[in-house]
Image 1: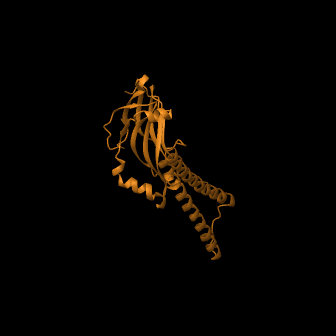
Image 2: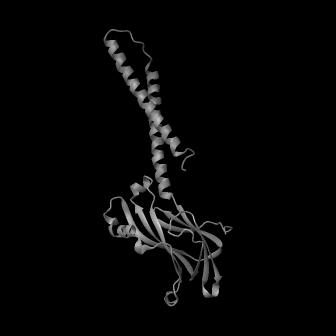
Image 3: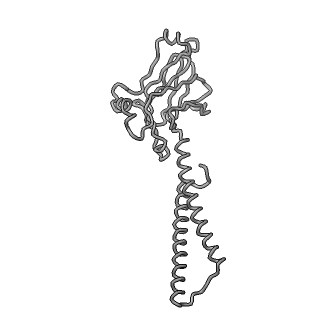
Length: 237
């Protein structure tokens, strides 16, 4: 939040200020022309004084300006929230069970039903790092500011060696999270996304980290793709 008030409070407050300010301005102008017409007809009209009229106009304009400023804050706050939103998807603990053989254990906690097999809890891999692969659909900035969330699907978890020769020599350990070969909608998106209005990009993305028994990692989805970060919840088991 950029202000102590919620978006709804700013929205309704701004709308009320603008509506009452415009209505008051309309009544002020109507009253002015009504008095002018009555004077021309010879009626005696009471004058309220120039200073009183200026103060009334100032209050009405302040109401309208404050209301418009509140509505601008709502738009800015919603846009800020959309571009800084990071949706948690998967929580991970990763540590070596046999460091000499580069064998590690991953404990997974699914935060959303984002895969075909959300029941997977423990994964054994070989490598220096663990790697998560997935597919991402990103919307144009205008749609993101309007609140559209990125689309994603996790596809694989695998072990990764830092040394390329070791990677080639070792038998890869891969855990499939989603059957890409049968996913026709995503295959179609990869081929045709550039022709669809409103879609900024569709691509595959990989993120990886070193295992650490003292850390808990979270995979999150932002308007730019996957983020794999430490969340300092080492007590989770």
